[in-house]
Amino acid sequence: MANYIVTSTRLAGFKPGDILTDADLDGSSIEALIEGGHLSTQTAKKSAKTKDTDEKE
Amino acid sequence: MATSVYLSNPNVTINSVDLRDQCTSATVNYVYEQLETTAFGDTARKFGGSTVTSLQNNSIEIELYQSYAGSETEATIYGLVGITTNVVIAPATGVASATNPIYTLTGCYLESHTPINASLGELSTITLTFTGGVLTKAVA
Image (cartoon, rainbow over all chains, first blue to last red; front, top):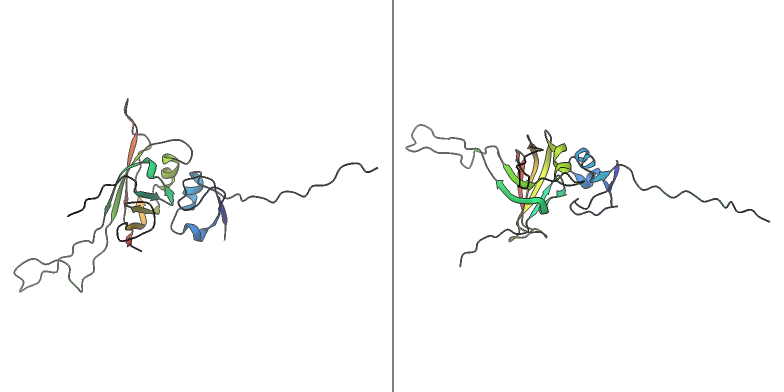
């Protein structure tokens, strides 16, 4: 099941940043919501691990 | 004393998108098609009956201000032409109740849209008609 991230303030019952599934949008055209800028298929990614690059003495 | 309805802040949701602040008019038409059941022996025409269930033929008409800004009217509506969606209308925001029935037209079809409907010196508006679908009324 695909996940979508809310990207507009207009999606009823949700706020920007919420993660939704198809079940949350039952009956709605997800394609139209993505096209209209209300949803994105890109979910937030985990930040990459940092590597300590300081030179050790 | 009789009461009247004054709609100032209704709930208008098209394809899960809240467009209340762009909406100036909404009409929900709840229709069961009329089937004639008149037969020999009747002295007047009859329609329907307890054993005859006809098809719903519902529609919702909505007038919106046009806006081409991101996530506004045009962005929301353009992709809905030619497909089915859900439209939700209620007299007020908030939960469903006897005094705030929420009407949902599920699986309704948007046949057409006028992306440009502009006249000099006037705000651009669009009128949408969603047809078909099953109408439900929630009061709780």
